[in-house]
Length: 208
Ligand SMILES: Cc1ncc(COP(=O)(O)OP(=O)(O)O)c(N)n1
Ligand SMILES: Cc1nc(C(=O)O)sc1CCOP(=O)(O)O
Ligand SMILES: [Mg+2]
Image 1 (spheres, rainbow, N blue to C red):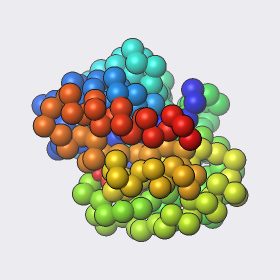
Image 2: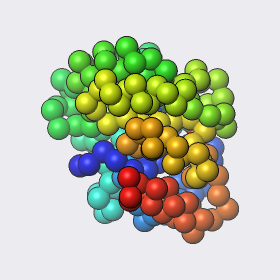
Image 3: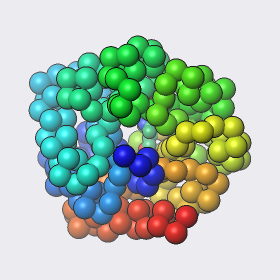
């Protein structure tokens, strides 16, 4: 699986009552990775939704990544994203195996990315690059960091936080191999609009 392109991330509020049609639209539009991000503690719903998303991702040749929850990722045999306070990357790698995609939040710190790489991360994520509707309090990162990270690391780099169709190209030009997007993708009035946006994000990678 090539780690490049649009990385769509779900949001329980934005996608309430329309999770599957909107995610399918993002996949139709070319999203390469999909992260199931649900901060609730409703285990049964989380399992049900994650299973449905795994099936959808399989149909479209995309990879499903579970946010925060290594046990759920292991149960479904899919990837995992861990933040700095979400548990040990090395332990997750041991649990999920060599092939699993495991990503790490590195905020605006190259040192965190180097550490994540040494512990077996498949990609590193930096952010937030712009004002974020979804996570306004996330620490801010500058685009210069992407160039430094590109030089220093031999791993795919994800840019997250306030990414839109207007600012994504600049991040890609500076070294982001994936752009992770919630609001600018899923805050849409229709599935058709989500698909249009996903295709437009994906097209930004076509010539780079
Ligand atoms: C691709 C990607 N990058 C960063 C994050 C943020 O992870 P974290 O800091 O653990 O915050 P939560 O998303 O868990 O609130 C992410 N989820 N995905
Ligand atoms: C989940 C998350 N993590 C971030 C970080 O900087 O680590 S920013 C963010 C939210 C991304 O959503 P939107 O595309 O709506 O800004
Ligand atoms: Mg987390």
